[in-house]
Image (tube, rainbow, N blue to C red):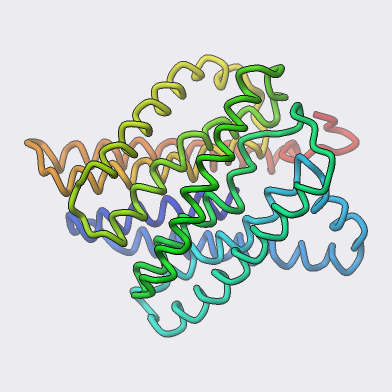
Length: 308
């Protein structure tokens, strides 16, 4: 989730640069940081595939871990979208590669879930990553690169997967025991699809509000209120790398809010936009700082001396 969150924050800063002329270099630095983190994690994953192929196959078949293996491809699309202003041709080529990888992985992993024996207690909001987040990020990127047909195709994947998977995750959250503490931050994923869907819709349809996007926004408001109710629970959680799950959803919600402010242009628009930018930057900055402290103390990942 680390490069995912940084890429999301880079996108928010890019919006502010486009709308209000804030320094675009901030977005570029964040995007480079996201790309470096993504590359380091990709190299580490490739090394594990060579050394421990059975372990990787086990994770791909694991009901808890398997959805997160979509992130390398989805983040790859995000990075390609961020590269577009600087190297359009290379960015478009990279986007198409990661687009194909995302769709392939989403289909294959969904098939894997069908044939494996899933336990409802192991189901969690991270299941939206391969086809919901993947579908909507693909739609946003395809629209930005002028591939509108692929964009609407991806939007369809995202919408249908959103309706199916979030109904299942809400059912699990409502009627099964509470998620383990390590997975509790993923509950914020319940709010992300609406923000991604609205962003993709504006990208493909144009920045003209209609009943469809008003409905999507209404659902997002509901899910944000749900998150407010969960803040006391989040506040009692011990810090783990899982806190990075808060970052990308917060960034896409902030980006969607900036888009609405730019469209509606209320009095104080710029001030509201700065507040949105400051809030999401502080959140992701705080998680980054806490991660660096944990790394310095050798406490970020479980180990013999740090079992939690």
